[in-house]
Length: 387
Image (tube, rainbow, N blue to C red; front, side, top):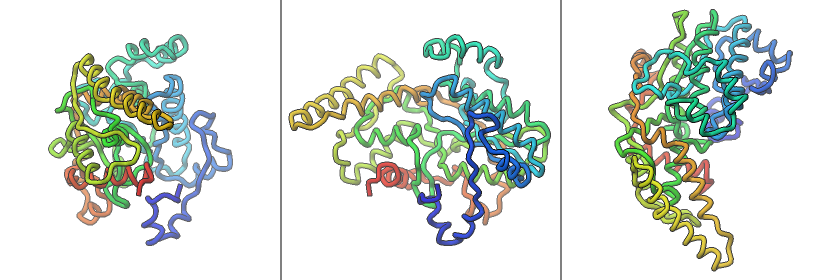
């Protein structure tokens, strides 16, 4: 874990600090988180701040897995936190989209979308039926956000005497600094923009004016640390929406265009299709037609040329994978949401000028043209290993 570029600077400045890390094996799906009794005692005796961010974020995981890992795992984490002798703060990392069935999402806890017993009954009876699941979760985009809504309700109900904070990041993207553009996973906007630059995605379902509410990963970590350091003076759960600033945000269309523009400054990656600007439409039939003519046909022709050369075809499979991703994200690319960030804004305003430099987390400060350069280069360097 420590052999990633994220820790390079720390290794130069203060390498001894890494010796403070004590790894503890565990498993969210096992009883008592799969933690040994000896390790459990260490945690109970020594931990004063607990960050619970473990979750499955794969939209394609089964409904049962989502509930088992995200909801039941959170229940186990809460139970462990209550037993910690010196716990000052319990911080739960949720998602800004946990309540995206609402047009306006404030920094409050909302009621769970369904009674929990109904959820378990449904999973037992229809847990693998995609059409029934879609109807069951109502206005939420997928089972991941559905599970996170339940987690928030559980944290609110079961946190006991723990001083508790919930942080809700929106779409997490590569870091702004230390190092610029660092990322380690293909998630949402990162995968979508990369597919655009490789000619795999030329069509998105949605409207060109829908914001792509991204937040750099280091801004999320910094805001979480600041929130924990400030603690929670109340017995009620404090919620912070960690999202882009409404006055400094890009749309999905603009973000894809800026990323593509940056990628065109470099030589095209060998073996990729010719990219083109993204077209967006809120009409399913139009999207299907454009996907066929602007994505499927070019991929088929490119694969035919590979076969003629005696090579293995690969482009159609890559285009189909990219199309599946955009289908999974179509709720995000077609729905305009209003995330309220009054409490987060106040938290950032209380920071000293020195802390604002050490722990940057204000989305107002993002210069998108500069960030997109680091975004593109980071994906090339850290995910595609293209120097």
